Figure 1 (cartoon, rainbow, N blue to C red):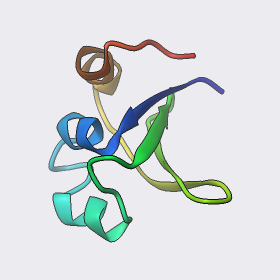
Figure 2: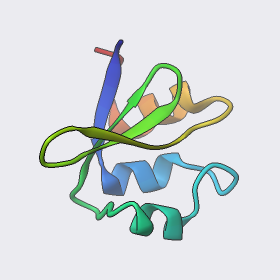
Figure 3: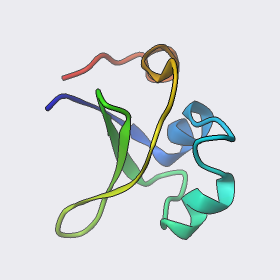
Length: 75
C-alpha cells in the first residue's frame, strides 16, 4: 500500500465538509502538528504511539487535492 504523509494542518486543508468536519478531526485527536497519512483508497490514518489508526476517508478527486497541498506523491 502506498501513502502520502502530512501534518494535521495540511489534512485540514485537504478534507471537504462532506468528508470530515473540523470537530471530527479534533475528536480524533488531530492537531496541526499530528502526523497523518492517506492511502491511495482515501483512508485517513493518524499516527498513535503504537500504531496507525484509521479515522475516516476522503471522497472524490482527493488525489489532486493532496498532491497540490503537500507537493508529495504516493510512496
